[in-house]
Length: 618
Image 1 (cartoon, rainbow, N blue to C red):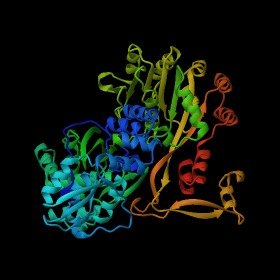
Image 2 (image 1 turned 120 degrees about the vertical axis):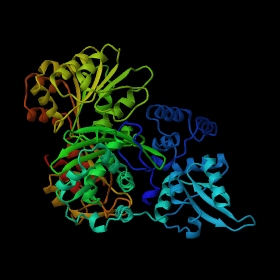
Image 3 (image 1 turned 90 degrees about the horizontal axis):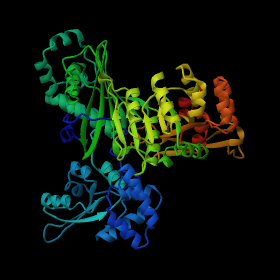
Image 4 (image 1 turned 60 degrees about the vertical axis):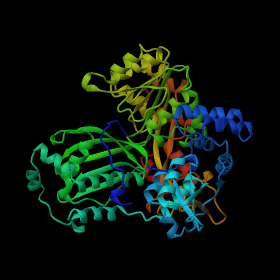
């Protein structure tokens, strides 16, 4: 896709954050099935009333599309659902095989931008008296406006057939030439009179002279930020990141070059970078989009951007930090539609899931989620809250920031500048007749004291801490000054979590390793399925276009769930060590993070390298 074809980000709204990629919803359905269609499926015994009610309730909580939810919840096979929908709207259902070639003259009838925006692809062209008939595969046959546009654009009769959104997207990606990020950057630089060597960072730049030339004149900075090549570069960075499923964009100034990196599936990957001389202009452009002060270069700043790419909205949380050679910018990409709140798909082991379900449905007490930044704590919290989100339950959250907005939940954004801290918000919540309270993070003694007081007076409280494992959260609260008897009487559960990269399904392959080698890594031999030759079958990704050559696509959670039982409470009262609490937790069946990773490895969900990378400390 050329830079000019990209959607131009707009800074008109300043809301925020992602798990990105404009990818199909679960089941590959983009069709928003109206409720009356669901009722018809019940009437024709395609679906039971109980199943439809569950799907509608899930839709009310998550805002997902009914067709996608019916498939993802396992109520109906995707192909059967599509066949039923096709029969009801009077079109034919087709499959688009991966190897099927579409003639170039057919593709030429539909621009790539239109195909991507509306999830459609032309399949064939039949000659006729009135110029011919173009057959187009669509994911939503009820979108009659785009069909009318196609008729006017091509001068042809247009026949639609229904296909899976995933198969349509695969066909579009195979047949339309996707310009690489480097090619797009080179095009921008050529248009602006720069060379490819500049883009590669070969040209030496005197950053001090450049900064002096730019000066502090607001008008000149705004002018540099509004220049056409700079706007295209900013658009290109954001569009490329979304296409690569990145969660963060890092723009990092060095002494002689400007480095761009995307965080994809939790790992930073270097990307083609603009020339160093565009550094200040690019930073100004991002600040303008985020409504920040472009004249301030000495202090950190935070802002938000809302953009639309291929008819899909994304929110970006922008952080600007002054460093030695300029300003480092990090943009966190949020895609609310990609928020996974289905606990069945987060990666819980069965025994851990049983404890989690029991503790989040307790009438009162505290449930803590621990882990480093970016380990998926917010997703787990939102998933738990979504299960409790019913008309008869009053749920209030205080967060920094409010990452995703959930219907039916009262969410408050922290604002320390006006005194709205976690502790202040939590105090106010107790006067709002809440049933469930979520505190984004426990950072100090005051906040945890109020949270425990809320739990002891009949409220269910959720929050997060930054600790390495679940038992460590108890010690951490003690170090913050919390009395053991209060912790013992209020804590229900502590969950420690991490994310490991999942193996790409498109290039997945199996291979054999020696069982003895796995035993040396600490995996018990009874867990292994050893062949007669002493080998164990594992999986890995070869690397393909879908996973950008990494062999990984998507992530899956590891969950260490510590249930605070009576023996654990006794150890808390005795101010026992982390080692003693861990030992008791192990006796009562807690699976630690390494144990979870081993199960994911042997189940073919991840690799040895990922297991070691994420759980090396264990």
